[in-house]
Image 1 (tube, helix red, strand yellow):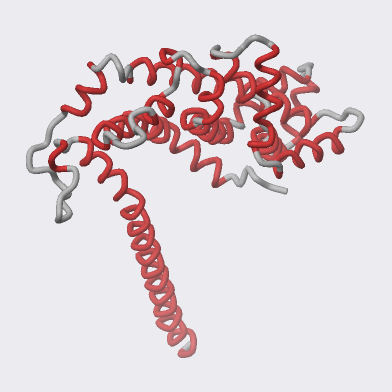
Image 2 (cartoon, one colour; image 1 turned 45 degrees about the horizontal axis):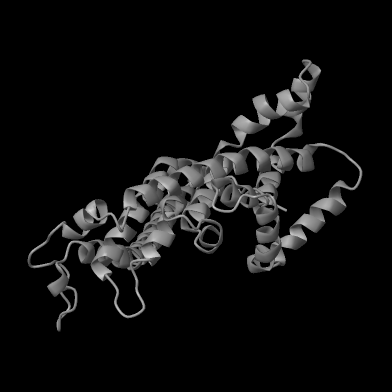
Length: 294
């Protein structure tokens, strides 16, 4: 009896010690994450503060975070100057990025489900060949894609920018790995109830894949939104150009409008930040569910 009474305080002390170590480790983790977040946010804060500085305060002897006389002149110049049609550039980028993202999600999810659940001749060999293309640099496809787009008469056309973006392999691989984690018993039950393959995909697999779709959507949107080289080759008309190309035009051979460039960069960053805030819980769920699984 005495031994049992003595064991209880020892066990209680051990539990308190374990909790103390857990709280300490969690505090250290939060501290490290906070430091990383501050390091990541510093350039963004500096970009915004630079965008509201007058031209005579952009370059000073001492580092000046908050401008002495903040102004929105850089934003007004971008919007009102006919030589910098940022509204048109912004609209073009949004339109192209949304169309590319929607089509990539549709095409890649269908292809990924076929590779994950359907049996057809050469499936594994074909999938491995597709994975092999991930190791090839994207620049390698510029000339063939340009020749194809030019032969189809799609230069200076949004379709010339959108269609080549649908041939990515990463989305197929990403979604296939997620579909592999879905229990097959759910789909077998749907087949027993009379559902065909597409109905099973639409009603069972796709709703369960919302976290993976959100993550792939953010990655695709960000890639299309920031794409510079391919739209530069295809879109010659200034009214059709996207935001990255337009912002690049603010940097001349001898002078650069840094205030205007920072204002444009802030405008370019807003949609991506809003998209991440809206889809954050889906992205976290996708990471937690370990969609990338061998």
